[in-house]
Length: 184
Image 1: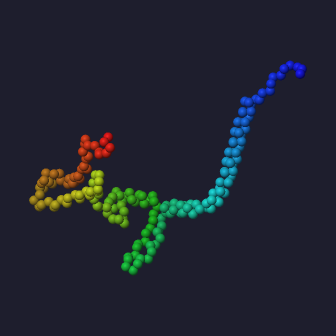
Image 2 (image 1 turned 90 degrees about the horizontal axis):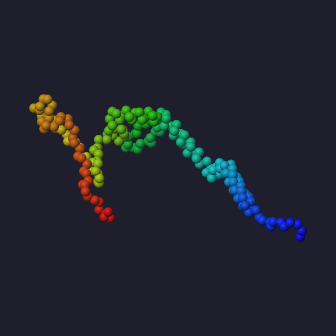
Image 3 (image 1 turned 45 degrees about the vertical axis):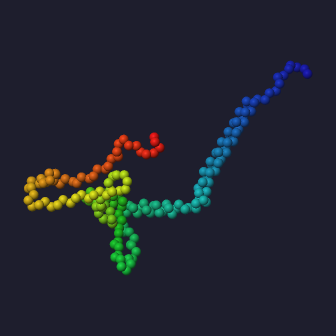
């Protein structure tokens, strides 16, 4: 062989690795873009095939209900009463905004009768203590003052006139005790 000595051939390893990685990334991005395009293009068709428009009745019912709560009108007539029952009166509905204002006005007048069908709420409530509920005792009814009562309105027992009955205080937990348990 004649001529100068040549360098031995070497593979360009870095170039091959770079081209391989870039090709893999390009293939991955292309697949993701095609899937996104396909899913976006066929999502409505697939939803109709899966559900068949089942939400149309719910949408129409919701629209009807939203329209109905904002208008005046009469409720459907109650069913015919049985032989020994009194007929139920016709009832009507009003817009929600008007009803809320009426409830607030009624609550200012008499807060114990906010639900007309239930009646007055004059039952005593329970004491705020732990355990089984215990009713608050009703306030004692003051006896009528005798005819020879003091004319200046002072109560003969020394208490203030018209003072409200004191409610019993809630019991307090004793201090310095620990709950039984794992001894910690």
